[in-house]
Length: 178
Image (tube, rainbow, N blue to C red):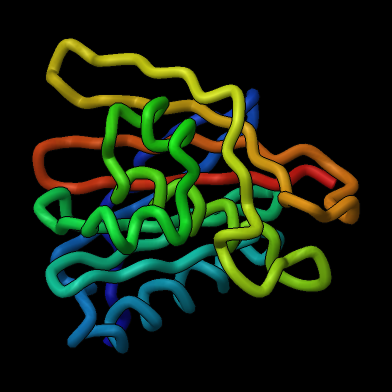
């Protein structure tokens, strides 16, 4: 039986459209459902880059015509200061209003967008810069950023993304344009 995904939502990053869908039906214990929905989507949209993410209670995917990375975390998840200093700089934490989890989500999305030869071994090699903060009327916080590979000169393109913090979830999207 084919599983029809819920309707797509849309975000834009530097003018590039990224479609995404998140569903509580696709959480970690139901990865097969997520894979079935994704396979059905790909049969209709073959020239798309896709990135998956799932948590204990949610799962989803994002797609674009350029390499895309997508990460999803529950907003209530916490990251200790000890763990945060292993992947985030003090400047990144300050610009992300102290949310270590948001920094992690942004870096994980950037990491996923670099699949292949350009992908570093760890997210710590990714530096976030030009971070801008906006707050929507509904309380959602938005962070827009650029990313680069620290201590590497092999990126050869532009990386940009956005991180969205709502009451329930933190979602990160990143695009790499070679």
